Image (cartoon, rainbow over all chains, first blue to last red; front, top):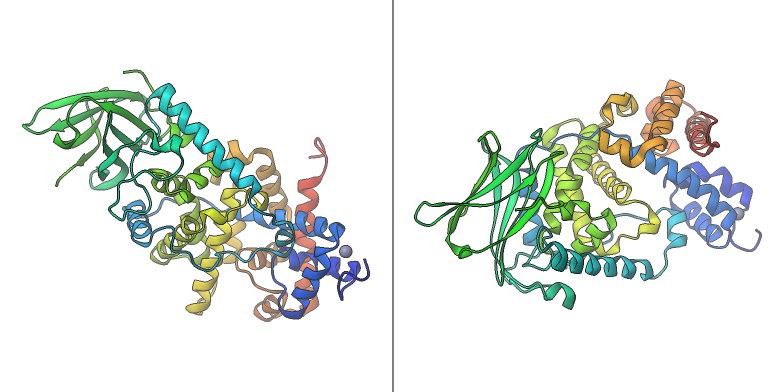
Length: 253
Length: 191
Ligand SMILES: [Zn+2]
């Protein structure tokens, strides 16, 4: 591969492990990048090694973050807003940079989001928290972002509150006012392997059973339309079949 | 009321990230909850103390959230992308504090029990093969590889910190990663 850079294939492949691990800097790096731009063979060698290095990260043990972690991330994310664009977070490794192309694939992915919404919105009529309010920007606007398919589901978010068990955050509940109005939640029900009933406490102290869902393996997303006036909801409780409270949230104004 | 499929949970990682980039409601929560254990787990493995790990994990998730629209599936899976960001944040953190890595060997001294059932389902055979291959590496090679992949240490840095010749550091990194690559690319049935 002469003429594609100052380095030969042999030199680049000699550097391959360190290139793949993104440990090469300065002139050597730019020379290698120049070579890789024009040499699929070397790119292939480095790709394979980089895949191995990436896979190693996946072997690190998972760990439960401290209580309230989810809420703190969401609060920070909401105040920053996803549109506050800053420098790219990851310097692409040499092989990857060479492969980056325009966003064609991403558009396909976006299309599938819209499709997923249509299916969930018309088919199940429940359970998917898309297009029903605002999410990340939290700037006070309640307009629906995204495509018409998303917008058609409409709605205005009245509340987003943590579900807690003994003070520990185990999920989040959202209340949307619209036609129809919705309650949506994501919750970690832990080791419970039985149906979970969702109860609403409403103004005046009455309890309304919203519905129930099966709890199989911890993390769940569930939602349902509500027939009552959503602004009258004061609390949400998840109760096991045996009557134990698994999580609760109070909605104050 | 009928039981309903947990729909957000069922979304593929890439779709979830696209929803996040589009600012779809609920995606932020689903995103954080799906990945926080992995991100925090890596952070705490890298820096050792929980408070610092929380800062790093928060920062990594926020960076990923902010840059969700720049994620390209061809560059690797979402967990890989996210853990790369996490590692980079942790490296910056360690540099700023001039802190030393926590016990590097501990990072890859991973038993099979450390892998949850979800991991097993997703990563399956490959993760298992990689784990075995890592376990089979000589101690020096494994240590050099951890310092390079998890802590971004160059061969020069490893040579200095391990007090070994530069050539030896390079050889350890090279031999280690080549063995893992061979283990991962060897034909089915060869294991
Ligand atoms: Zn070449």
